[in-house]
Image (cartoon, rainbow, N blue to C red; front, top):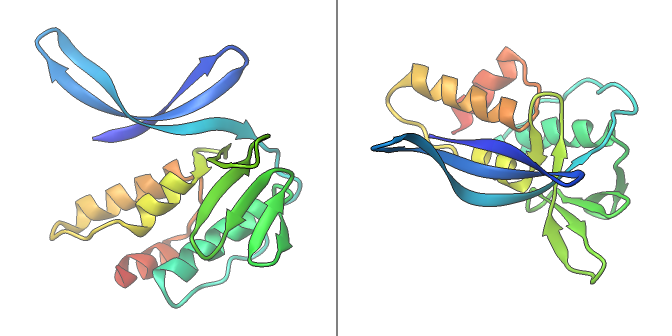
Amino acid sequence: MAYIRTKKIGKNKYAYLVEIVSTDKGPRQKVKQYLGRIHELKKNNEISEIREGNSKESILLNLIIPELKSRGFKDKKNNLVYKNFIFNSEKITLTKKSKNKTNKEAVISSEEGYLSTFTFQRILNFQKTKNLNQDAHQLAKYFLEAGLQINQELFVKFYQKL
């Protein structure tokens, strides 16, 4: 089972996807993937009412976009932009332009989780199994790790769209 771990190096925090591996000497954490530097953006205002969608992508976008707008993101073409951060609503990716004009994966700290391309894609790519309780628990955990607040009705609707 993998989860997101943060490390503080110098003054900055970084996010990693780690997995627990059992060894003879006990459990160890193995880094599976580097997710990016964590950026802390304060909420400027409360999230307005969340609209429902017809597909799992539209439901997820209707959760992500108000969260980002409450942190200062503004509409620009098909993207949401704040300083060097760019959220592409077509690909559902969150990147940051670096000094050499390349896009790097960005991670934004939220209340209980991290807004990032990885957490968004993990929710979108979630596969149903035959065990409803385990699926619901796992999907709810993914929403929490992504820092997205979802009500029970919308959660059930999202699960049915899978």
